[in-house]
Length: 171
Image (cartoon, rainbow, N blue to C red; front, side, top):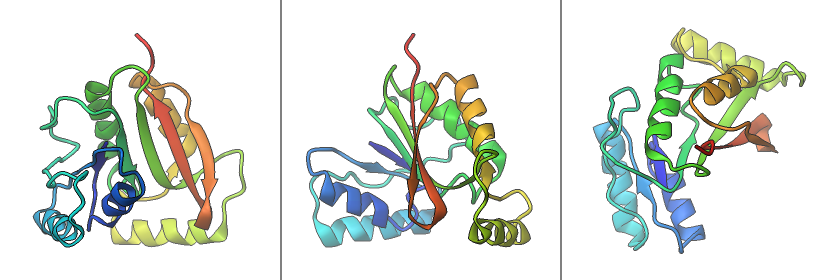
């Protein structure tokens, strides 16, 4: 599983510990983040997690030819929309049909009343960077469909977050 925007590395370590039968490839465009990931890997000694690699989703092709799955936690809202577009294009280029692209984070939906905490979070993100913000679920789904992914499995998670599991469409 390729993790995009691994940050400090704590998510990759958590999943590698919990899912010892899977192999994890953390990545981040930031050198300091990759150093943190490497320190976590060294501290835990987990055999199923690879050294971090540099992946900037906006640079194509990605430095990895294929993955069985792609995981991206909390990047979509803390990056410009163009990074989300690049994430889907890049994932489409390395995933085989049926393989999952898993996203986690806050989303707005036209079908669900927005929690006040997500409205405040969106405001704070946009104050830090006008290109950031909680994304509209329907816009993300439309982008995914345009990039060759099927409609997602959407699961409500704690703190008004959603887990989105997109699968690369067949053929």
